Image (cartoon, rainbow, N blue to C red; front, side, top):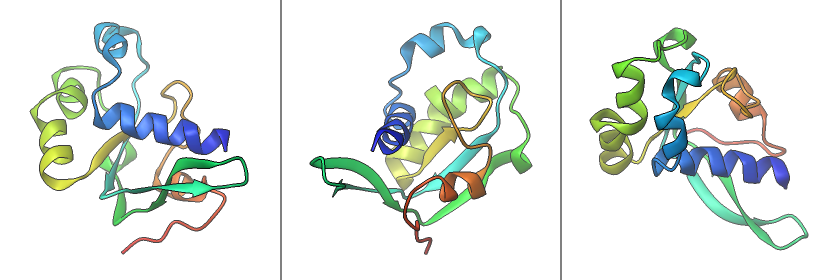
Length: 124
């Protein structure tokens, strides 16, 4: 359950631009790759301790920039906090999520992201 909450927090934080402190401390983050998670399905799932938000499906997961680290400059800022990130989330329903070595993120690519969950994540 804790793992799912971490995943949910990362996805929603990225989607909602909730990491304001990360934006202000932008220069302190390690360079990291990014995943484009197309149309994540987030539902309440009961694992026995009551319902918790969990990713239950995605249309597709893409390793952006061939899973290379994006330099911490204007492109990186834009994909998370600028027009690019907003258009992806608001217009298309997609999420740009960080990958390891971003702090507290256990996956380094789409294969690890999809394999992270204790149940299969279907892709369209």
